[in-house]
Amino acid sequence: MALPIYLGLVHYPIYNKNDEVITTAITNFDIHDIARTSRTYDVKKYFIIHPHESQTKLAQEIMDYWQIGFGGQYNPDRLEAFSVLDIKSDIKSAVEYITECEGTPPIIITTDARKFPNTISYQQMREQIENSSKPYLILFGTGWGIENSVMAEFDYILEPIYGPGDYNHLPVRAAVAIILDRLLGEKWWE
Amino acid sequence: MALPIYLGLVHYPIYNKNDEVITTAITNFDIHDIARTSRTYDVKKYFIIHPHESQTKLAQEIMDYWQIGFGGQYNPDRLEAFSVLDIKSDIKSAVEYITECEGTPPIIITTDARKFPNTISYQQMREQIENSSKPYLILFGTGWGIENSVMAEFDYILEPIYGPGDYNHLPVRAAVAIILDRLLGEKWWE
Image 1 (tube, rainbow over the protein chains, first blue to last red):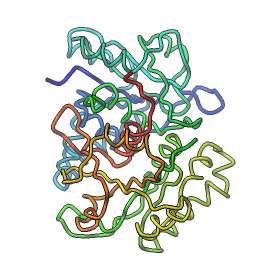
Image 2: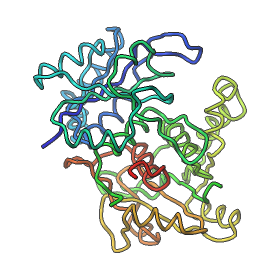
Image 3: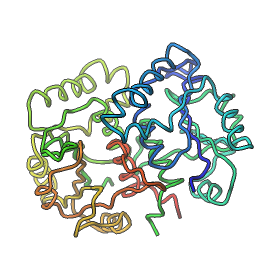
C-alpha cells in the first residue's frame, strides 16, 4: 500500500540571489517533471504552492489540457502523472488538505543547502518513514530557498545532497528525483 | 580526483511511440538540467549527441550565451555547469573523443526499461567503477529509447529504475539524476 507521502513545490516566501524575499514563477517543466517523478515514487499528491491566481490559473490550464483535454488522449502516461497534481495558495492550505485526508497533520520535511539544528540524514529519515504510519509532507523551495522564519517551523531538514566535487547547484527537479529515490526507492545497494 | 566518467544524451537512432526510428529534438531543459547534474557529480563531459546541424547550432548558441555571453556573468554557477557540455554528431564521435583524451576506449553503459542479457545491477556497476581506472560513457536515450541494434553494441545495460508502484515513466532528466547519485553519489545509506 502506498505510504501517505505528499510533496510540495514552494514559490513563496522564497529568497532571490540577493537575499530578498520574492514570489517565483511557476514553470511548465517543474509541473511535468516533478509530477512524473512523484507518480513513479507513489507520492499521494504533488502540490504546486503559489499565492497568485494569475500563475495558478496557468498551472490549472496545463493540468486541464492533460487531464481533460487532448494531452491525456495522446499520452495516457502523462494523464496518470497529472492525477497526483494539485494547486494550493500556501503551505497552510496544503497542510490542511493532508490533515483532512489523513486524520492527522503531516510531519513536514524540507531540504536545504545549509545545515540546521534539526537536520536529519537520509538514512534516519528513510527508517523513520518506513516505521511510521504518519503522513509526511516533503517541501522543496524554488529560487535560492525558502525564507528562514518559515523554515524554522518545519520538523526536519534533510542534509544537502553532495556530489563527489564542490559544485552544489542541482536543479530542483533533479533534487526531487534523488531525494525520493533515497527515501522511497528500492534498496538497490543491498 | 574525478573519475573518467562521461555522459551522453542520444537523439538518434531513437524509437518513437509507434516503434519507428526517428531523430528527436534537442530541448533547452535537457541541456541545462543535465549539465548541472553532471557538474554536481563530477562528470568530465556531457555530450549532446545529435546528427543535424540545424539542431546542434541551436545548442551551440545556448552554450555560447552561458559560456561567452551575458548568461555566465549573470549566473557564474551556470557558466561552470556549461563547462562540461559538448556537442557530437554521433555516438562514434563521442567514443573517439574519450579514446583520445583517456588513451583507451570507454566502457559503454546505458539504461533501458527492458531487461537484456548484459543487464547489470546498480550495486555491481558502482563497485566496478570504483575499482576500475577505465573511462566510462553512460548513454541515455530520448523518446521511447535507443534503437535495438545500437543497444546491442553496448557493454552493460543498467536495470530499470523502479519506484514502489507500477508507473515507470521518469523524465530522462530525473533518470540521469537518480542514476548518477546511485553510481557516483555519497554512501548515504551506511
